[in-house]
Structures are given as C-alpha cells and as structure tokens.
Image: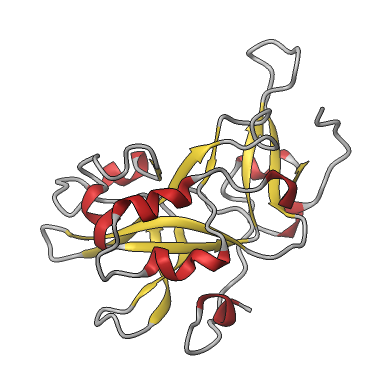
Length: 220
C-alpha cells in the first residue's frame, strides 16, 4: 500500500508502531541522496538544525508551525529543499474534560481517517553532524489550525497532505513557496473521525495495539 501511495520502488518493511514519542524514530518518505527516487527511511522525531551545538534542541522542535516555517531559522532551509512525508494510521491528542477543573486529567483521543487509509503528514528533515562525527538525521512535523473535528480537542493539528499533492510536496526542483503554503489548510473534517483511547498512550513504554482500542467515554 505504501509503495503505491508514495511511488516507491519496492514495498517497505515497516515495523508497526502504536505509540511513538518525541525523540524516537519515525518512518518518513523523502528523496534519495541523488534525487533519483523516493525512499522510506527512519528519522529521529525532533529536528536538530545543522548548526545546533546540542542535539537536545530536537526535543523542542518536534513540530513546526506552518504559518512561520518559511521564516524560522531552524526550518527555513529544510522547507526549501528537505521536505518529507510521514505515513500514519492516525495521531493522538489530549482533550480536557468539559466542565472539569484544570487539574482534571486530559482524555487521550485517537484521530484517523474514516476509511482507515493512511494519513500523509507533512514534514521536514535535517542532517546534524556531532563533534565526534556522529550523524543524526531528524525530522519535524508541520502543524496548522485545527479543523472543526479536532478543534474541541486541541487548537492545532498536523498538516495532512492530500495524496494528489504528494508529488508537489516532495518535489525539490525549486517550488514557489506560495504553491506549498496552499497545502497548509486544515484537513477535511468530514473525512476524519476521533474516539477516546486508554491512558496507556500517556507512557511511551506502552507500544502495542491496545493503545488504539476505543474506550466507552463520551467525547461530547
């Protein structure tokens, strides 16, 4: 499925993940080093700028706001020439229980497509070389304003690329920024669904199918 969706030469062998935390590896589709084909690699989630002195900065750069991605120093060069896409079955967000005190625990929600097709999340990647010649390839996921479905849960959501625009996002031939920023609109709310899941997802130690199981909690 992924090979067809992203026009990869072969179907990638991806280990299923159910609860990926920042600084862990995520799957990402990008152009090969020579630009001749698309490849699916694993990148560290949390972008480390090439000029960074400490890779710990990546933990603070797991997301990039689409409104400023073309201007912010950690992202602007990658936005021009190092764009990638992360396939995902869905994403988690945490909703504050309505009418509850601020100390009440937030309810984790899982958001996915109604047809169970993969989401295609817009991202950027970067290569960082440490003082010991260690190489770290990392990425960030772009966010935009929440759509009508996600807004009651969180005010932001990932930039989800329509499959028809995959070619445009990955093209490194020098895109006009305005063409790319047109892709930053919140994804169609009628194509997504959200449901509550267990607080198992609150710990990155839990990474199994139970994380995705719906629980009988009212979301309205």
